[in-house]
Length: 257
Image (cartoon, rainbow, N blue to C red; front, top):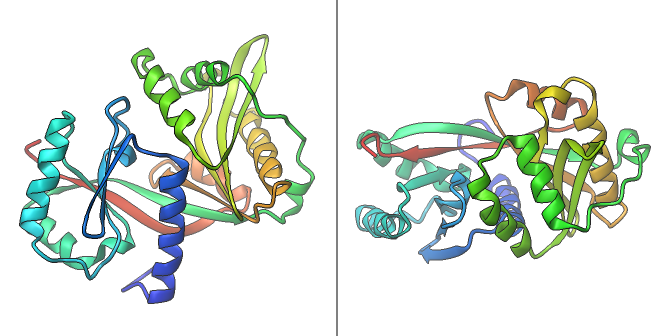
């Protein structure tokens, strides 16, 4: 979305932002005007611990609101972090620029049509029913610190839409993992990873296609995901599956924190 987003474009962004909040829920959510303040004590992920402005025209009392948000983050032991999508508008970005806030973690929201032949012809795979088994597999493929196990389990357990937990395993060794959240006509992909020793063998592609087929059979018609903009390997994989960029967002944080 180049230039100033149009109202129809912002409506699409709002749809996907709302789907993201439902699909990957924070443990605590507060509102300050149209700012959604998400905080999660058990997991440090930025999107679970960030201020998400949802209206570019909601610019009243910015310094006071930033101070209030900072107090909430301090209570959780987290650095105040803004996540700026196209819904944040330019005025807030200019203020943060003027105050020297750092820009980092630029990411892309990508979408794809689920009516493709690749999805329809994908191998059927039944999602795991054992959340503990999936969490162990996901942590292994990501190389996640064991201290985050309870936090990840809590997040997955709190997801309200239908959830599919997918894994490819060989001799009880996880090769690839992904979460697919079916929410109406949307299917969101999360926690996608392939074990380092198993990369380049097509496991990730096969798993994602099976997960998307699972969602399509339940009524989803569009898939979406979030990926860091500089993760070119993952982006190439997603592009081969028919994904294209919908919009971008990035994070802001004070440089002295």
